[in-house]
Amino acid sequence: MSFGARLARFLVWSIFKLTSRIEVEGFDNLPAQGGYVIVSNHIGRLDAPLVFYLLERQDIIMLVAEKYRDNAFFSWAAHQMDAIWVDRFNADFSALRAALKRLRQGGVLVMAPEGTRSTDGTLGTGQPGASYLAAKAGVPVVPVALTGTQDQVVKGRLRRLKRLSLLVRVGKPFSLPPLSPNGREAQLDAHTTEMMCQIAALLPPEARGVYADHLRLLEILAAAPSD
Picture 1 (cartoon, rainbow, N blue to C red):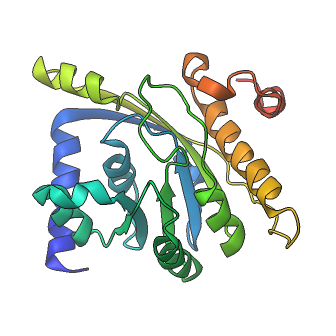
Picture 2 (cartoon, one colour):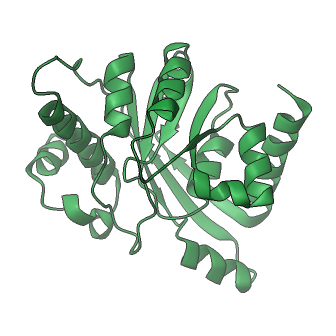
């Protein structure tokens, strides 16, 4: 790991240690080795750094929106973390190819299938990029639910010099069937729905958004062991 990467990791670690109380549930669900895809909800700018903070691996793959290239700090941090710049508004096949290559080499891809931050803190409609990469690479998917990272909550608490209260819930890994040549769009839709419902099952009911009443979510909740 380069000096810049170690410095970036140290800065992320220090910021969270100084500002946050972080509770993690289900950390043991993360595979000990090999490539996999982490999919999570996206409610604030701290989401990606939080996952980076929790993982001890050096082969984390992050997709960062092109708009952050104009921010000196975010651009520097993304470079040090070896992030992949992605165009959120167009089909960015070069970014997908780069992510797929590193995923097949055993890296850990961190993605928010929604593609953009939720405006109301609830789960929005998933996009097919994450499900395509997971199915194409043939690696497990690990759903993660984040709470407490909403930008307005973070700003409000820090403004009052209060520590952030962050909760990370890690679900059980699951696999997606390989994509067959015919009906690929329908398959990707089904894979994406599975991802989003697995995330929704880890969120509190009021944060499940457009998937709150989805039949697949209800099936997952019904099959979950009771506390």
